[in-house]
Length: 213
Image (cartoon, rainbow, N blue to C red; front, top):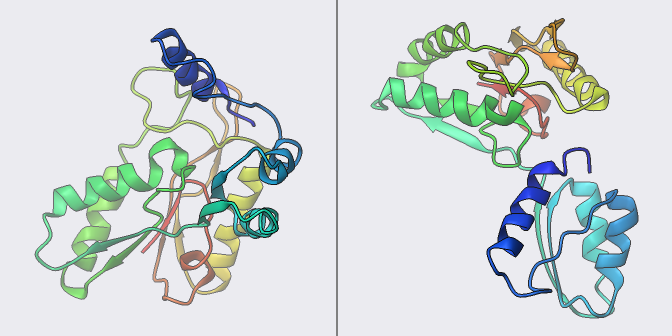
């Protein structure tokens, strides 16, 4: 509900292109208000939801008495696997664009990398070099690679996960709050090194510009 503009424009384009009335409808509002209506109304035959685990569990339970179909994609941690014979330039760009594009605020973000020993150090060094040329700022401006975090709450979440990563032995590079001419909640891209499979940063979705290796 914080960024409805792009969804509105897409639906408007489809309607102006001649899509049949009622074939696609956009309902704007907070999930806590709109969600219960859409997931409990008998007129709804199926529900597909992408979001948090907690909300998804509620959606899964809500339609049960009616027997409608439910599809959920919840709290993903999408690994990028980099093996010894990987094309280093391609792998680096895949991680940087996949992990930090859209400020990492997408469910398909490549939020952590699993890298084999032989290529690990070269890969990490190349990612750090690439991030050194990564520009944070107003996403509407030219030459900007990454815009701000969506709101103060998400910025707080990002910083909290970075603190957890440090406490569990991770080495955090970047992840500083930036003060820029255009107002917004700006965070430099954070790369967390030296993590283990069981670390919180590798098991829970951050939904921000934070990538672990």
